[in-house]
Image (tube, rainbow, N blue to C red):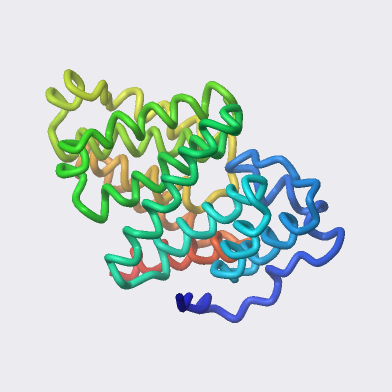
Length: 257
């Protein structure tokens, strides 16, 4: 299976030797992933941060369940940003969700096994249409997995972002009344979750992008100026790895439109 190349020529995203552990806290402030002891899993993370997503998936999977988080994160970021074939994208995301479900059985206290399950299902839902996904019961699974991730790791900024975005997406697609009654989605809760994410991970472009999108989904034109400011802040960040570079470029593209 051919993997598309990371489209930018940044060389600052290689973290050889001790550099990976030295920069780990900053690189993983969003997902609170613990530094791995296995040298091969460390190599898979090096590939991930450098934008070699296919290699990160393959190396991670070769390490067994210890390498699932890096393989799953690499596959979801790749599917979200670089895969143009919708069928392939959906297939990658569902494979991630299935591997996460295996982790739920074997390593139930791994916060990222729950977060990445929700993240993959969330991107899959956007790919098939959020309304269809809600009808298939995926909304409940996403909310449950994010709630579980936050119970295990209350400082998980990315799970706060995703749960805040869930509230916004549901309200946007089915309205505040049905969203609240059927799915427990509330504007105040969505806003609080995204505010918390920003406090936990202040140097994150994707947190600002998701927050901006959520504000517009929940409050419409009333929050357009705030959304634009968040996008401008996101576009001005200096990325630390390939995923962050993709986030910054996405913010720049949105501002250019």
